[in-house]
Image (cartoon, rainbow, N blue to C red; front, side, top):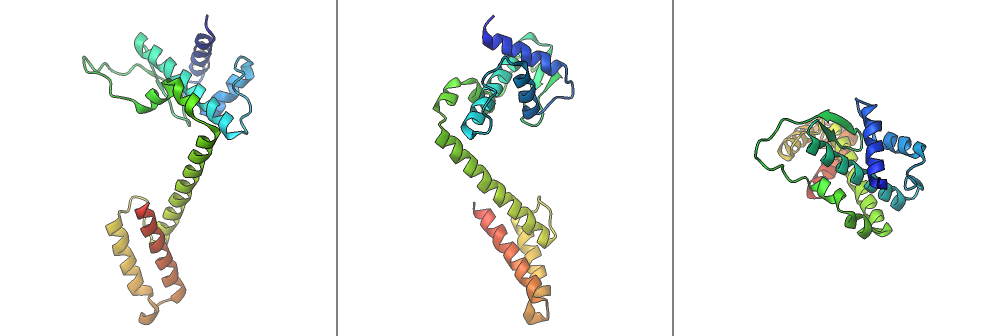
Length: 192
C-alpha cells in the first residue's frame, strides 16, 4: 500500500469517528499524534505551515474524489470544519461544476511553486484585507449600520448624521469628527 493510500485511509478513519466534523487544526493534531505523518511538523514557520496545509488538503480532496466515485459519501472541506456527508443526490448526466480549490490542491506543482516569499506575500495581503474589514465594520458601527449596508445607504446615513452633529448646526464637534472619520474609512475601503 502506498503512503498516500495509507494517509487517505487514516483520514477516512478519523473523520468517520467525528460525524460533526473537525477543524483543520484539530485534524492536524490527530494526524501528528499517529506518528505516521512526518510532514505535520515545524508549524511555527509560515512556509512549513503552508506546506502542511497544502498536503492535508491535497489528500482530503483525493479522499473526496474517491468517496464520490464510490457513491456512498461526500466530504465537506473547509479549514473550520471538515466532515463526511451522505452522498449528494445525483446530478444525472450533467458534468460536475468546476471546483477551483480542488483543482489547486490536487495539483502538486502548486505546492512546489510556492516559495517562502510567496507565503509571506499571501500573509501580508491577508492581514491588509483583515485590517480593512475590521476598520470597515467599526466605521459601519459608528454610523449605526450593519455589514450588509451598500455605499448609497452609507452615504445617506452619513449625511443624516452630519446634519445632526455638525458644529455649525449646534452639534457635537467630537461626534462629527468621529462620523467623518468613519466615512473616510468606508470610502477608502470602497476603493480597495
